[in-house]
Amino acid sequence: MTTGDRSPDQERDEPELHEITLPVFDWLIIDAVLDNQASILASTDHGEAARELAATRRVGWDLLPDWPTEPGGFATWPRPDQTVTIALSPARWGQVADALAGAGEERLAVSILDHLG
Image 1 (cartoon, helix red, strand yellow):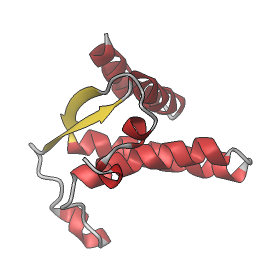
Image 2: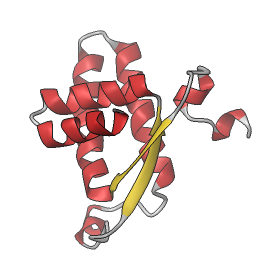
Image 3: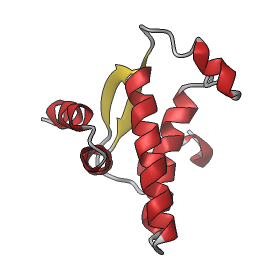
Image 4: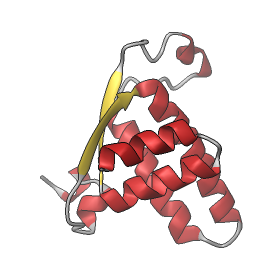
């Protein structure tokens, strides 16, 4: 595996990655929440935290090569049964759950925390 093939968590040699399989529709919600949170952080001089959230978003993008590039593509994507398996460190999943809870997406936040045990 080359450095370009590694996730942000692997780049930092974090202890372990935890895989969670979820509907792509749920990942789209996570992506939107992380995008909003990263924008807020970037505008308040928290650039490093914003970059971490952006890196987490890229993990999902890299696993979904059929992600539409035009808004009209979302009319038929994702398929209702399409899932994605995302591997992040428990700490990174915790950041995702915190962002979701802060955005009122408690169902997803609790689901992620349940997966982590």
